[in-house]
Image (spheres, rainbow, N blue to C red):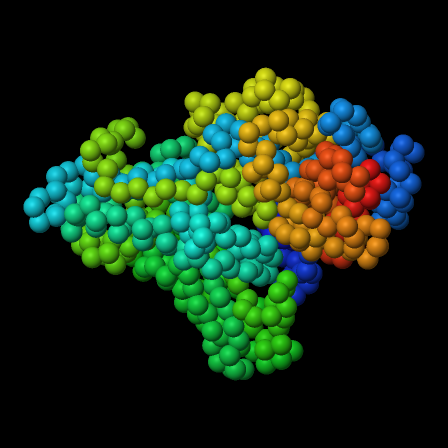
Length: 563
């Protein structure tokens, strides 16, 4: 079986088979704001019943659930009014459903509660030598990675975080993205200027990224997540056609000697095939001099980029050696700040020069980059369903519990969920922090987490970070409900996280699970907590997938209207 992950609103595609990509050609991708999360391998962790919804479900909602496309599917819906602890709807609450990225509310919520929404992950630079009167550092400069997700690369002029509904992390699988405006290297430039301001004019040693904060975690076979980031660990390509027979226009960012981009993409005549290819999409040579990757193929003049329906088209190369890339970027920033660096600009991160521990004398600190508040990181992760950010959040949560790897962080989380949130381990199956693999939970577990969050100091940040129905993030384009005048007012009144798990083969796609969990500020003024999920929907095409999201949007709008 070929396993794919599709996200619309971020649309993520990965495959175990090179033959599967035809299922999701860019020109077939339809505009929507839906999240579908990759599972590694696997099938159902528990058997689930099929059949029509319970008669206890309101008629309008039941009518949606009983559409022909759901004849073999299983629905679950639990709605609670926390003000009086009243369960309003309870359908299949014993079933372990595939919930995909709804899992992120756990990893993000737990870290928000542990460190607080105003907590910042700051990245300092230390030296290990001496600085003479001419400003020459006879020694090495260490950039100590903190897990800061954005490193200043998403900070707007007013200090807020820049977020696009179509995030570049999934540009290759979406077929497109919309880039944010800030300079992705702004944080590295600021650090370099602070090093220069400290009086250092030359570094006679080397530049080292101390990336030992936690053990690297393999992200879905692509690369190992470490605590250092540059542009969310991707190189963006902004692509426009020119004239038929000539090279297309391709601009890249960040521009760094760490990875060169070779453009052999041709502009094709109208009606020709779209054959754009990234070769390789995951460049393994980062850290070696002359490392390049190629964008090649054919871009028809009449190609219509998905989602935006206009150029530019955005694709990305994955930065699969984050520490090597960050080292080069930092050296280039230092040179731009008039600090001479004697070490080679492009080389593998020289971890052999690291001290035995991550303890550095305070007197040797020469610069520090203050990260955005974690409330902003949470907003990014929840709005666009940023997988790497959610996995990193769970690793950072693990550090607060005294552990430094994913397996131990999952165990620590399990203990905290039982003791602090009263959610027993039997009610969920988690494999990472983002909802990968066959992530499951029963609806009461999700409801319990959402309800518990309401009494926590970080709730305001958590609540505002969730996608808004019909407005932003992974719910931006779920708007079909607005055609019903009685439901139109639900826009922006549903704050909820989406998550989907799609499995496919050459014969078709199965929507193993689509979930929507969060809060409804009902027309009556009551706040409801809900978890809505459907498993095992046969998909004949991508329109079916999009319809599931619109149907779940309609159900949540009915909850708003009728409660």
